[in-house]
Image 1: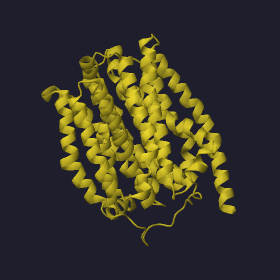
Image 2 (image 1 turned 180 degrees about the vertical axis):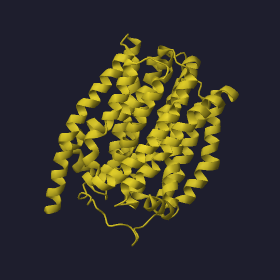
Image 3 (image 1 turned 60 degrees about the vertical axis):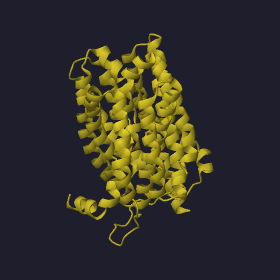
Image 4 (image 1 turned 90 degrees about the vertical axis):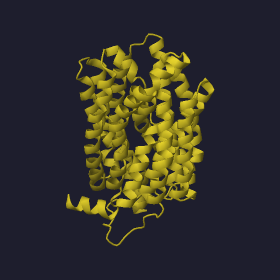
Length: 409
């Protein structure tokens, strides 16, 4: 533990910058946007499926844009990218507040997803993966805690501010926070990049050879990996997007459900740090087969149980899942495809994740509107997680053998 605190102290600047990136990305994350879902459906006269389709179209647009926009992290400094993405994210928040036409709503959500969920996280994780080698898992686990802080604080805060000032004015407050607080802090913290030091431990894991993005898209293993990597985006986005509907279906209180995010944030924080240590000791590929198991359990709990305490148990397993998956999926790519073109490759991966998060609300909203039982959908998601976990066991072994063969040659 002493070593961990030394690590934090020596790298506080870059870790704090990465953590704030992931925290402020919350304004473009589904859990935050969906807190306005009830207001939006009422103001725009949309059904669950209708709003799900709007959300899907906007998020698909961001997924298609990200592979092209995301490559800028390979060409420009972290600070230069920050001066682009934070102001545009603030503009997206303003558009959410002012939207009175569906076209403006789609544009606002497109920008929120592209620059919030997409570029804020992409910029942070790519930079951190480059700045750290032997301690990459530990470093990524620390910056990912920004998601947990956002999960813990923002749902309750949004509900309170929406009641006091209205949901549209709450989005204006978010825009002001980004420009007045986030931009100065982030641009200062990442003004200087981190370079390797003599005190850094020797890397235990040797990264793979440097693949080009063209080589990656021709690699069959990439698409098998994506079956697992895309699952959390699809499932977690779906659950958070339909949280208001689920609360109404189960007869729960929205305030209580919002409070249960604190449990997810706490458990997430613990397992984020634990998974970072495990990745540095064992490798990301070694942990790959286990990443979807807790998510499957979380879906099963939500699909079959109805008691008032269920959200807290669900959030505990969801926190376990998020803590493992967000750290692992940030650290594993250099082990598989190297560092040189990491920004372009991660942009491709993240685009697929965003695509999955777009498909989730649209598909499930359509199914809800056509009478497909939502709890049954959740149980199906659980079964998918368990099945893909078995596949990932095979994939992990294949990729480790390939990496060993590359190092020998």
